[in-house]
Length: 439
Ligand code: SF4
Ligand code: SF4
Image 1 (spheres, rainbow, N blue to C red):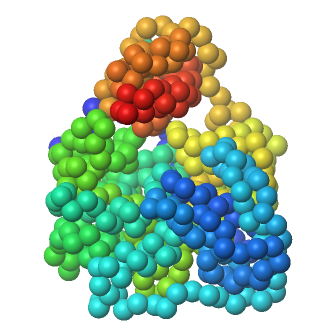
Image 2: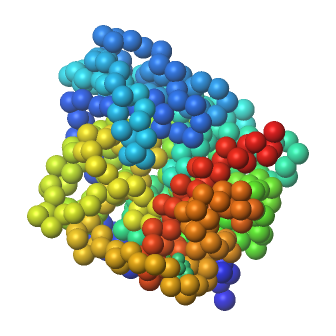
Image 3: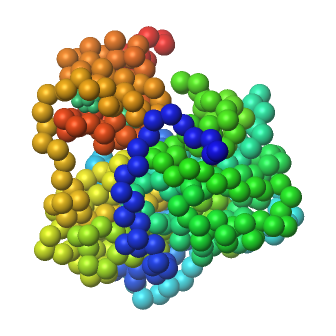
């Protein structure tokens, strides 16, 4: 029997829309909007100015502090201006607007030998390349490659679950970039000094499982772990439990139970940065949903506006009603087609009325269905009510900050209550109180 976690749901997968679509390169746009904040932590600090010419791969903004990441130009062109834009996460940030010119000169770093490269060189390269986690949180990867010295790490786990419906980006990467993924994992193992790598994959990807199994035959310290298909199997805590049997206690991190998790795309980017000297300038993403004419998997220069991607995929169907950045469970609804793709964008979904429809909201039925599916054993209905009545102290005591916003509870709520939006709001409001408590 496969180890799994308590709770969770089985949303309709809808992956068939783009499963067979191999990656295509989006034509380079004439103008891009490059956000200075595409990662968890402080925005990058601009080191270029209006009128400067920049080459593809050239650093235009440097990290500002320990938790930060540089930004590189994905095209060769001239800096037009800096302007405030709305990101796909619906926050406001400054973005550098670059007009493309006809010169496609590159300015990558010097490639390093993947066999002789040292641990410190890998970490430094990943930092300079501006690589951020591809699993959604966009945490600077070099920080995760440098665990505190008092933590003993036993496993690097590659998250190949891709448990969100519709998304097939990781599946395509597993098929099309198998060699690069394994080489990237080896570099991560070297950088962290860990001897065992595990690739955790859901059992709904037989083609990728077959390909990985054949490539891993000769590997002595990298293993494949096939997991039950269930949402949110790809959440860090759920993945660690399923792969190692270890539980990450509330408020603790994977480091604390001897694990480092990296996404499929992140490992491939690590390989590219070391072997080719390439910084993170492209996003691999799925464009899908019944509201788009031609679903695809694309390699897109970061900073490309949504409208370029939608046009390339044949445009919106008449029935299109809602655009989401990311997956349908954790993604963000969009209202501005000028918003640009950023480093961690995993998908653009265009949903029809039927796909996007929710149960009309009514009062809580006290049915307990949200409690039974929460993988973290939280009480979503209680957290929602406490937030609604501004009882943030109590919400903290009930563990509101532990919520990973997976959306499982809201998906299962027969009263159509937007539980995650309420809990997200409650987390934000209770954060200041929490800081006061810890001071
Ligand atoms: S969104 Fe939060 S409360 Fe709801 S199921 Fe996920 S972890 Fe539990
Ligand atoms: S699932 Fe919805 S209706 Fe049922 S207890 Fe939870 S919040 Fe209330």
